[in-house]
Length: 257
Image (cartoon, rainbow, N blue to C red; front, side, top):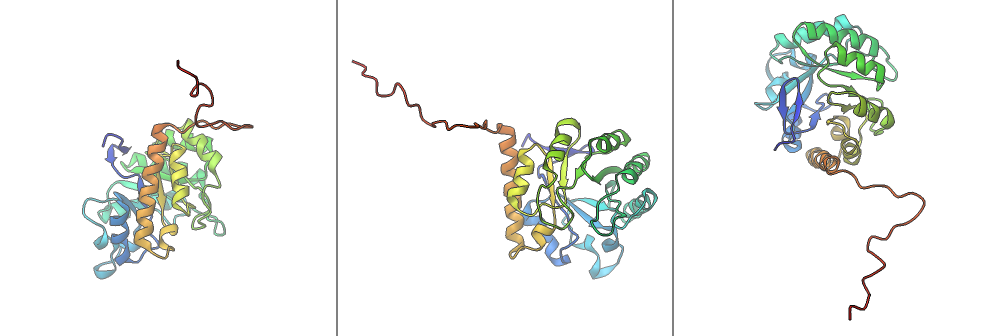
């Protein structure tokens, strides 16, 4: 394949990033396999154990780990969690997640910008989770973000692309991969995000709460691939205020004698 996703100098065939927080350890590997996933998040608290409870034992070989800073309320806390993840062998990628709002769980863009700069200076590859705001996204890019991860809807809500127009602005204006993270509830919504020009989609709750989890992982894989192909093909124009025949109505009954 020539249409590869590139983040932090690493290339991926898959544009489906898995959020692993809501899966049992045994189910994680199945979802990764059925979804064709090449990058998956993990909470450091789930890897900071030994023996059977360590999520790292259930991550397939070759998978790129994306530890998140879940639980951080400040930039300094996020950096400490990232350092711990690196010491645990999770690599240099890090999803910067800083949340102080306990009701709606909205990310704190100001602290996130600060954390991105601090992490970049320490050699990390920061991928910030953020409220979709153009000014904040520009500041994160300037601070050294490898990708921008705006929320589609409140985390865990499965409400889809409530922030559609704001995400599209980021796609149009930011020269980094835009990855929709949080809120995507259906494969069709993931497909729509890709049709808009997003570089990838992260999903967790939509799959974890499905009746058939492996099958839903496969559905997301296919939807993301279809959306990407549609974006590359160029979506057809929209005709407003009238109909337009799909076959010509003139000329084809003309007498050729």
